[in-house]
Amino acid sequence: MTKKLHLTLACGDYEIIRPLKEGIVKPDGIDLNILTGADSATRHWRFLRGREYDVAECSGSSYIVARDRDLPFRALPVFLHRRFRHGFIFTNTTKGISKPTDLIGKKIGVKSYQVTAVLWLRGILEHDYGVPHKSIEWFAELDEDIEFTPPEGLKLTKIAQDKSIETMLAEGEIDALLHPDIIEPFLNKDPRVGRLFPNYKEEEEKYYAKTGIFPIMHVLGFKQELVEEHPWIVPNLYDAFQRSKTIAMKRMRNPRLVPLAWYQEAWEEQEQILGEDPWEYGLGERNRHNFETLVGYSHEQGLISRKIPLEELFMSTSQGRKRGVFRT
Image (tube, rainbow, N blue to C red; front, side, top):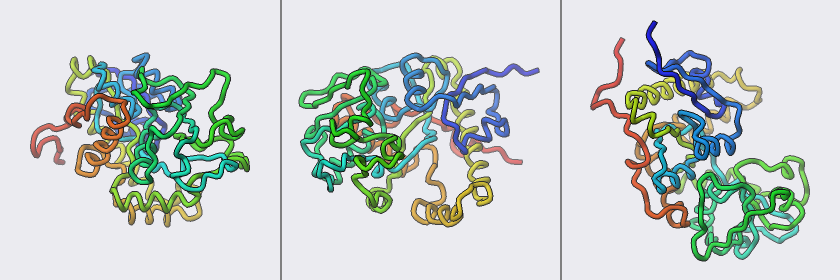
């Protein structure tokens, strides 16, 4: 029997990786042990701090910071998670915040300062709505994935261990909260908590029409020593993720799979607005613009020392011009 390289992959339990998880797609020469049990924050910490996995879906923001620090990680342009973010700005409804500029001078919470969703939101608020990130007093709940010294002029406080940033918002200790998830007080319909943009979908559609960006959240990270010892796994895994997504997207076109009354209409609307493959991988023009914007935000907000070129952030998947495609 041919011996395969055994690798542990940690990622979210997405439809686009189902064919990999179920063994329908098998990367050439690789036996994947796929772990999907950890939440994103825990997975990112265990990969970037503990180096527990060979390959992991990883915070795009924290990965950029890791590369700026020359830490031993590399990444593929495989983007398993994207999300528009205008609907994830929450406010305390007693604070009189009705428009973005009302956030200036306020106390705003974050899960952690480095979180990709929060980096996108700070950049969007500053560039599109005139809210400078240094005009805010920031409060973070979690330790950062990568050690971070706030630059001069940035007001950033880590809250006490026994505090919850979501409870602080509801009780008025902070004025607003930027978060990667829908927070519990909002899910529980707490009247003290609302969205800055109640019409967030309209804002997100306008944002996409203006920028062409469907924000990338995560990259596929690798231990550096792994790809140095086995460089052949780079194109092989990239190909496997591409095939898995292709199979999954074809399957998801069947409206019977999803218990939503207007699923087909939602699918058609997405295709009309975002195109046929909004989850595309690789460094085509749209993805380059997308991730270069994120790198730019990271640099201007003091997370990294320079604007890192994408060629330094992502490994090449090229197998030569017109090569790498099997003909049957």
